[in-house]
Length: 199
Picture 1 (cartoon, rainbow, N blue to C red):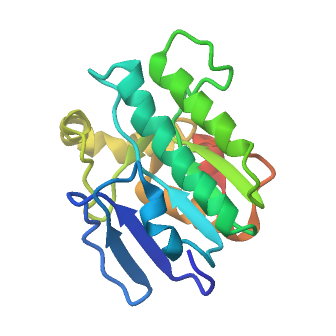
Picture 2: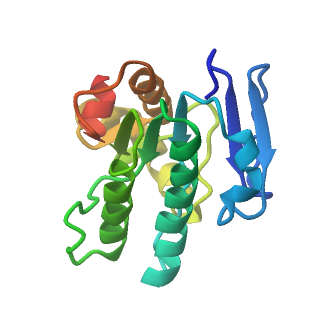
């Protein structure tokens, strides 16, 4: 986000946000493995909300690591070099393994990514680890399995959100928490679902 809280969204050709706002400029890019292509556009920003992710289902560790580690670290390294006062917020996931030695492949890779991000010279760097995220305001997951789960459990999700705040949050709450942490910081570098709901 550039000073004054305007925003720029970077994503691949097939994933336009579909959002329009006078303060939002969307930049579609076909190769996020090569962020240097748009590095001249990445100066003068206060914060980055890095929300790109993919399900590990059916993926090898090498392929999952390429998306889950290589892209965020490449982008974050470039941003850190061009924006010394930046706050970087990475959307990770509940159950991420900070030790990088657990049995769960996705959790090890996410942990490796988080640890690498926390070593970069940002003014603030925060890992958001939501569990179940209830989509609001017409937002739909791009993952088919998640869409099926939401359609089956849809009527129960608001109840689960109220009953289990340690595990369930909403797209709106995650967004509001990210903005608040970007502006004010947080005493914790790693925010679990209950932390996100409490911001």
